[in-house]
Amino acid sequence: MKKPVKVTVTGAAGQISYSLLFRIAAGEMLGKDQPVDLQLLEIPPAMGALSGVVMELEDCAFHTLNSIVATDDPETAFGDTDFVLMVGARPRGPGMERKDLLEANARIFTAQGTVLDKVASADVRVLVVGNPANTNALITASKLKRLSATQVTAMTRLDHNRAISQVAAQTGQPASAIKKIIIWGNHSATQYPDIHHATVNSQPVLEVVERQWFESDFIPTVQKRGAQVIAARGLSSAASAGSSAMDHVRTWMQGTEDGNWTSMAICSDGSYGVSEGLFYSFPVVCKSGHYEIVQNLDINDFSRKKMNITEQELTEERDTIKDLL
Ligand code: NAX
Image 1: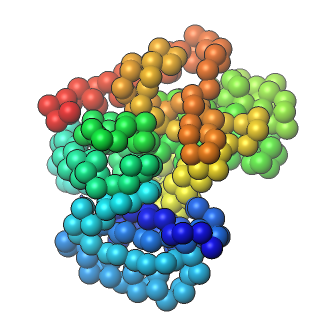
Image 2 (image 1 turned 135 degrees about the vertical axis):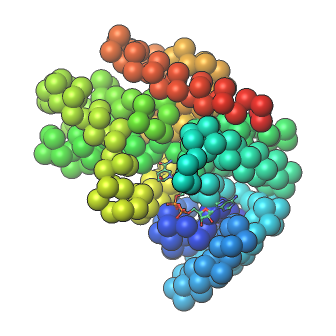
């Protein structure tokens, strides 16, 4: 067994965490030889529920779970931490406008980003899951002085996995045969799931499926899959979101496989003409805990229009909370 690493999860009594925490504790995110110290953050009204989750984690007697701290104090939760999964966020309440939601979350992520910068490990890696994830990541990163914005990412891996699964179903092939899917932009209904570069068993996907299916069926299905799950379950995606959060961190640390990439929302460096500083989802290759945007992909007019629409939405989100940046 290696030396334990500290993993912070915020919103630890929520429904995504109820799936995610048990899998992290079982060694499915960082490896079966990597013990973890869980540092769980909640707000005071949820501390009772969190104590129940802690009991259940203890009751599993996981070999890779070294210790658990449950707290409502961000300094304790982020202290010396190596990995942060920011799942906790303010949901949209009755009568709340989109602007109110953005601002309420911007305040949470302003406070947490500031504390993170003060007390986390210098090499910390951060994944923002709580919505609006891209803009929450942007505001977190804007509070960093000691740490770098490149240490903060937001999750579009669930969208990426949903896209793989749709292509797999349409082509009758397993998910493992599908490579080089891209999610561009925002984790929202404007995201652009792109299969122009995707392959199925090394053959271009667009040689196998109808273009009509791609434009009229695949894109809206992936964009609206979250809403479809809510309509069916009465609750938002939880186990699939937790699973994708673990995929995101595992791929970041262990690397993308040869000949493939993944999608991560990261601080734009201007690649593909995306405004610098926006948290925008790009295709990335990962190696040993680092990521790089895949460069020089051909972008046709169809793709460019869709990439611009989702960038425009992210720009508007940033403008809404600009006073807090
Ligand atoms: P829940 O409402 O079940 O859980 C959220 C938890 O966060 C609650 O227990 C709440 O007490 C806690 N919380 C609120 N403010 C907090 C704060 N300031 N500090 C610490 N904890 C705080 O939501 P859940 O279904 O778990 O979803 C969590 C977030 O993930 C939501 O914002 C949701 O919209 C977002 N999602 C993001 C996805 C993505 O792909 N990026 C997909 C799934 C999900 O929709």
